[in-house]
Structures are given as C-alpha cells and as structure tokens.
Amino acid sequence: MDSVLEAMRETVRTMFTDNPQPRYHYRRGREYEFQILVNGEDYEFEVPAPLMCISSGHFSDVSQCATVDGATFDYVQINLWGYSRDVVGTVLELVYRLDRPDGIISRLLFPCLSTNTLERCSGLTHMLEVLRLANEWRMPKIKRLIQLALIADGVVPVEDFAYVRGIAEATKATILLKRCNEILGRVDGSVGVA
Image (tube, rainbow, N blue to C red; front, side, top):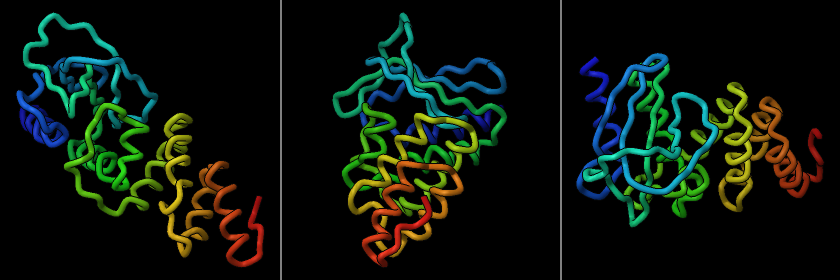
C-alpha cells in the first residue's frame, strides 16, 4: 500500500506548480481513495474512474493547501477503484497532456488547473481514447466535452477525419460524426454515413 500511495503522490505532485505542496490524506473507500486537501472553489464533474473528480469539501485545516496560477479548489479525489497505479498514472497523464497549446481540454474538464508547464503529446489519440472510455462507461458529460473539443478548428487534421469518423460511428458520438461528415463532404463530395 505504501508504494501505491507514494506513486500517487509523485503523480499528483506533477500537477501543481506552486508551493507548498497539497496535504495528502488517505482513507479506505470502495477500493482505494486517495484524497488531496486543497483550498478553494467548487467544481464537480461526472467522470469515469479513474479520472479525477473535483468537488466541494469542508476541511478545518487548510494551512498547507495549494493554489495553481491564482486559482484554488477545496478537494480533489482520485478514485482508484481497483485499478493499478500504472493505469491511474497513465489516465491522469493522458488527461493533462492531451491538451492543445491553448489548454482547451483542461479548461473544459478542470477549469482551475494550469496547463502552462505541461508538454503536449499525441493529443488526438488520447482524446479519442477518452471518447471511447466515456462511451463505454456511459459518461455523457465527458463524452460531450471531448466531442466539442475535437470539432474545434485545427484539432483533427483533414487527412484524419475518415479515421475519426469511424470512431465517432462506433461510439455513437453524434456531434463529432456530424462534423466529420461535413468536412469529408467538402473534401470528396460525399456526405458520409448519417
């Protein structure tokens, strides 16, 4: 258990740029619950485990809480729910690294978090994986947010729209599918599959 907690501490430390570091708190939940107490605003999103959930909380000791680029928040809960630390670390990294340079994904999913110091990697692949997971785990809010991000200008290269349309069809992502059909219709004169 100690190795799991330390791995999560190291993962979460990379998310914050300010000092002092957040205060870490562990308690047993459904499987594992790793909680970080921080000071601040109230955000709550419906997200699939093991993605991060930011929600309101009330704690008496906020002396070691952290802020990120001037924004603060109360309570961050990372639910492992039986997933290995490697899986959790990968998903967290995925969410924070899939951003475009303007940080649209983090702003949609986690409005108070900074993405300025994060490197961008293979963003489209990761965004499509989040879409797949959101569909599989029936998380409509995340599914809609990812689709809105994917249809923004410049996110999907024109040459990739046919591939993306296949994923949109498989995941019943209607917003994204409509956009793919519009773009492909302009490129080759077809309207695609409705």
